[in-house]
Amino acid sequence: MNFKSMRNIAGVAAGVFVFVSGCAGPSSSTRPAAVSAPRPPSVSQSVGGDVIPALLAQVSEENLRRNLFHIAKDPIPFRKVNYRVPGHKRSTLDETDDWIEKQLRGWGYRVERETCQVQAFSCDLKKPRHHTYAPPLPDAPFYKACNLYVKKTGRRCPKEIILLLAHKDSQSWTDSPGAYDNAVGTAAMLEIARVLAGQPIDAWIVWFDGEECVVKYDEKDGFYGSLHFVRQLFEQKKLRQIQAAIVLDMVADKRLKLTIPDPDERGAPLVQHVFAAAISLGLRDYVGLMGQSLLDDHMAFVWNGVPAIDLIDFDYGNIPGANNFWHTERDTLENCSPDSLRISGQIALELLRRLAFEKWPK
Figure 1 (cartoon, one colour):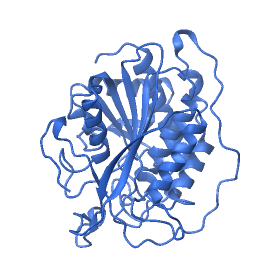
Figure 2 (cartoon, one colour):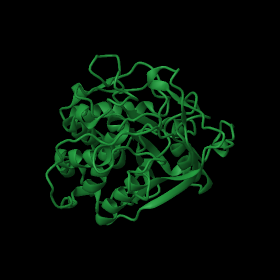
Figure 3 (tube, one colour):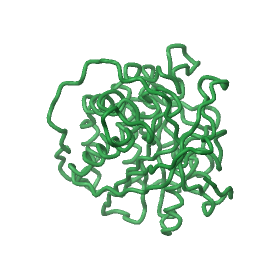
Figure 4 (cartoon, one colour):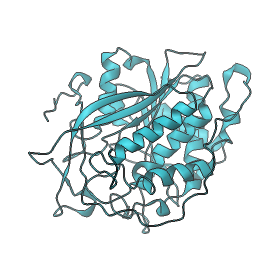
């Protein structure tokens, strides 16, 4: 697949690379207790239309646990476009999309999809363990992958949109459930969508595919789903309506510390609001600064002039500082914390409230 290589949005690549290796089936584990599908909370309208304070307590750790189990264990062991559970007709990534859409429609959302053609990563075992992805083979087949999103409209500024974002695909070149990277962000966004259902707020919630790169993360390689989404906004003349983009990626470590990558000038006010949000919730100890930049899906927006921030805990494993579970088969739900995921979801919701209902420098 040929990709244009211009820096600006007119040259954004409209595709995704993924790879599936020979996959073992999921190991047995205790399934969360079967219960009826969670319903949106009933919250009375507050003064000025700001309902989020009442919704923060509705973020359910049990729902997060159930969602995470579903898309990182059973019935969906991985989220790969070219892997199918034996006996199934659709890929596990397709099944993930269908399940997410079913939940959203049940809460009254109209779900939109953006599709693009994709090829598969190959795997180079000579590379370091966390980076064994390689360019697709010459005869690699094409598949369809998609971004999912829902649009919420409030009464305050319907043409000023805030984005809540997460990538939903797992690492396709290794037999990893991708629970931390990034089933947790996917599950958090789904729970946020549930608690916001029916509430007036100017926000879109988006699930991407194709976060991983082929060779090296930069403006030309990686973040294919988010760049494709930005390109569509540009072509629809809606990009300048985006006031802020908030990414949740790797946000459920058992020793949670959301370390915010260094922002550009436009994103600096967002960092201040993250800390203010955490402090107001009594969660200040869970937020810090990374002290350096980091390439992630938020950069698709940064590169195109949109204020963006990445909520991420990029230290995942049993050795502090080693990040040794990342991109490996040890990235399982047993190594994630639903309580940490609840905390991350609440901080994201409070950040959304501050951006949607308070004045802030843009």
